[in-house]
Length: 171
Image (cartoon, rainbow, N blue to C red; front, side, top):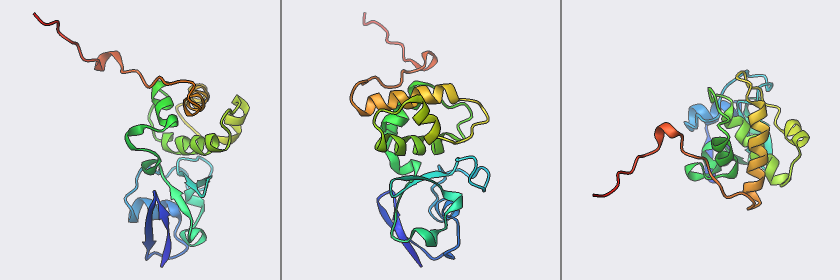
């Protein structure tokens, strides 16, 4: 039996210790925000935070992280309130959205370690692949998230025009 903490909840898996963390999260814990992309650690869709490090969950076994603290996209913040989530929404980063959870997790780890990253720091820390090509918006969003985290930008995502609610004047 393997024990560690996921999203601030103690878990124990009766899975083989060689089971990749990705599959324990998705199949045993139903935390499907962590995506399967390539299975080789190249794409980053499965990135989670393990003890403060951005880790490709397809490349680490549950036995190797006994006693660790794991945070997935589901455990990052309620209501998309984390600065990275807010900035990604505001910058309209996602297109298909498949890679976004892994990128959000990598960015959140980066900002915990570096509160004022340069564009080069962002590119070095977020090596996730995106077939939609969102990289320019990604760098902009992570910079904005850093400002949000430092309290320098309190704006949130704007509501798209087609979703704004019209208010009728009272007669």
